[in-house]
Image (cartoon, rainbow, N blue to C red; front, side):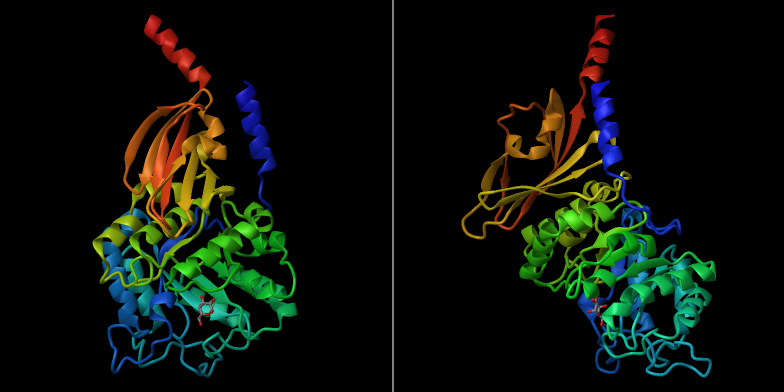
Length: 419
Ligand code: GLA
């Protein structure tokens, strides 16, 4: 009984503000987004395979449908900057670059939908996009309607070329314009990222407006970039963690797994920490040419089920000691995900005693532990006094799920066996 009361108390304490009520993003969105890997490559003459063109998204959709991505939960195929023509059409509507998107966006959306996937598009709250294409300022309703007419499913709305004092108003007006179209369009914002340099953003308003929101700088294909994102998240957890929950998520930017800059251990760290952070899992890599180990990691169903846990509560760093960080996320059914991240970048693997993880208290009287990374392993029944430790590689992460075994369950089980 005491346990039930405690659980109810914890759930009552953790009640995020009202989310944007469009029925979307009840779990962190999953998909592919072109930016980090393909950037603003518009040179289809010399680099037809990698330029921003309808072919790129069609090929990614093909691979996503064929090679297990869709089954693993990756759903959105997302266009980033540099897709439009530099001029709006005679009716003031955005149009895709005719040379690179000869079929237009509606046809591309039809193609992506025919594969059982969804299409994302990109625009900007200000006068121009970050790469200098036309922005939506003054055209929110027109652009929202255009995206709805094209049957787009997600809008990434950037914040370049905008007076920061008008950011909130701009993002809110676009949210209303999307709602007015009557189409379900997941709304991915960058409002807080552009407001932080001036003042602390209002996360209650952001959660009411957006389905996800970028807080911090763009991810690069490097370990220092991934580390700086986790460090920022850790430093601002008091402000940002309570804002996340079903319907709206903090977005630490794309997964760069499967590219060039991270070792395999570092890729495992990014995957584990993004799952603990309840982050959107938007991969930016070349799905047509990815190493099997990275693919397996990105499709790992145990990690994805942590990311997609229905409770939707973002985890956080709960302990730091001796260049280890413990990151923990409360999961449904009173379970816990525990990531032990070894930040020491000299020497070999180091051991961490599991009883030192703050979340280990759910092991009273007993718990069942499964190691998810680096290898899947059942660690069996443990107690508060466990001496079990895990080995963690430099810049790597060991990820576990911990399931409490309650006293009530034990009594029930015993009485059954004595019958
Ligand atoms: C900004 C965003 C990136 C990307 C680029 C495109 O930097 O934060 O994610 O969309 O613009 O120009």
